Figure 1 (cartoon, rainbow, N blue to C red):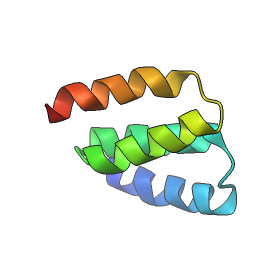
Figure 2: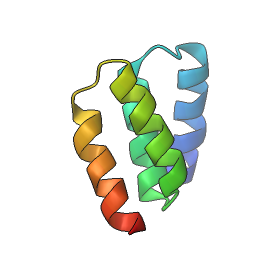
Figure 3: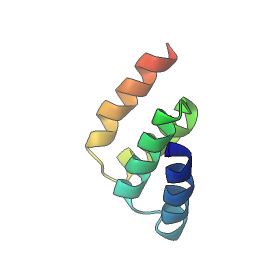
Figure 4: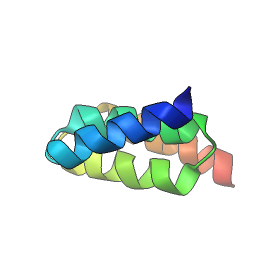
Length: 66
């Protein structure tokens, strides 16, 4: 299900690249699929767009890749 979510959310991000919420959700789907580099990228972009939740999610990714 998360594979389908990454495709759907990827289209949403393409349609609205300035949405921190979409990028955060896409990062979550990547994280659940063990695609940590992709998750990190989306969380960083979400953070740059003003998401406060992105910082905590980035920490979770960093714990997984250590």
